[in-house]
Image (cartoon, rainbow, N blue to C red; front, side):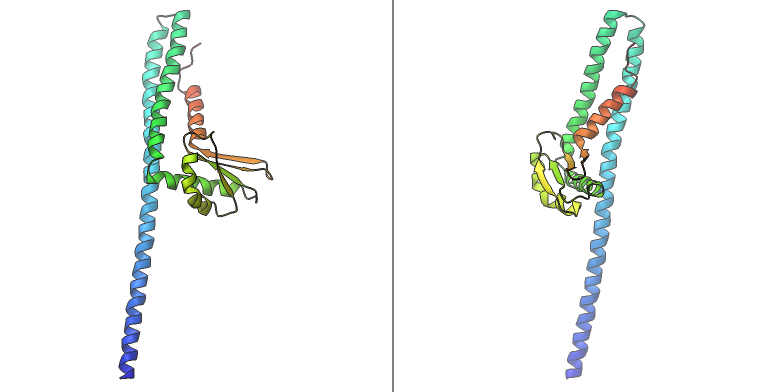
Length: 198
């Protein structure tokens, strides 16, 4: 009888081991799928923003070329006004999309990635990461993604989201905020969209 109990025990252990291996495999597959879906969603958002900007640029170029042929000084003043309105409208739409993005599960993944990027640059022991007040609820996830010692504070300067990090010892600031990324796009748009009036 003890031999039979030993066989049963070995059989149960083998079943448990197999079940654990299957659970681990499913868990890994789920994590990989989740990562792929989040990367896909992030890519789609950036692609949508790029397409929208390109479309607006084409429409603006067409309008400006027609208007310039008919107007002189007053026309130029009007074009400057239109340029600003168009830029403001485009970036208001982008800002609205970003605002919606910050209320999705993908946003948590985004700020975790920001934290990881910053951790590669700021390797000093005095790092402070700044987030929006609303994002302080993600402090644990941000610290976990950072993997080094850091403090997390809120900053009123961050309106849209993301993270920027600072190290006084290193004298380094790393800005991974949506605010900075949007401002870079605004500058790029102003310089490259063909809206200059001479």
